[in-house]
Length: 397
Ligand code: PMP
Image (cartoon, rainbow, N blue to C red; front, side, top):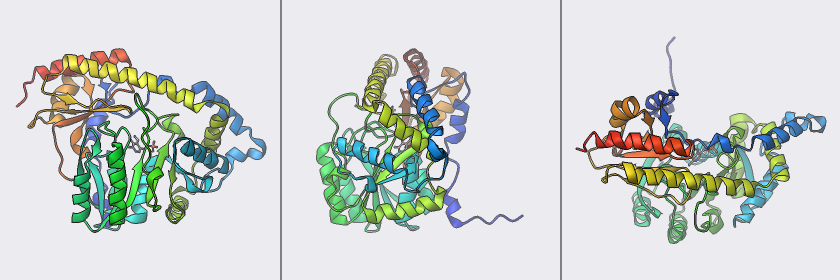
């Protein structure tokens, strides 16, 4: 049979790191690669209770088809959470998604024609690039520092790209770097988006995993023009397997995303929506999140202490105020992909994610994303010591 794929499939390719990460799945390898929450912190007993209750709901309602926008009660509860977090929101402003990943896919499909520009952070979340690529965008990547996306870089990117259709940002504890967009930059980003009439896609799965300081206002809360699509998710604060995320956006945008939802999968799992809704009614999500913050902050501290102790001086890492990742910068000329293949996996028996694939335009080899949420504190100490020893035994170029 002759296979005739659509043009867009040219941009749909296995990621270069897939193979490496598959090696990291070997149980004898300690992986700092994935973005997995700590499974020992999953609220298993509570989930068991609410799933049992949902299955038994009168009329089999949690086992039935449901509205494609999501269960009304869950949309209300999410609107409550959004308002408690300082973002004006009504139930009808919420579209339930199959994980926030689905919102990335819908946003690009709704807004981006082949050749249109998506402005991203440089580096940015790899899963977003994977979701955007079938829409055949070009990327304008804006440098970041410890305060997130640099605003002069954003301004230059918008000026240089009149066909920019959206600015994609992970403002809180970014994946992969862990940095957070500072308040003055949030304000400036919205000014620039308004001036250039560009949609803002605000992706916030880590927002509530904050270790220190106060939450900064969401971009959505500063949106005077209905141009921010805000994405949220229960993956990191409850469990990823629920696959419950959401979008909050103005009706003109949300309605069209709702049409794409029907096309994609009709609706998110009724059972998972019903169980999540019952969880929010029965239990204290805030208390659970407080526990996660404490546990992940402790792990982050253990990892950064171990890195300071064991890594060569030349390696710098970010000190995130929340989220699941730190981002390592090695000296120029160091290839984190080759080092992982040749040394980290076979000798140190440790995996991380080489940084190159997080760069949408010009890949830079001398970075790594290192996750501290999945491993135990002892594993973190041992794995970082092994990685540090391996780095020290291979002098930098
Ligand atoms: N956005 C970012 C920045 C992420 O890191 C992730 C998951 N790691 C997602 C979106 C998707 O999350 P989910 O679909 O599980 O809600």
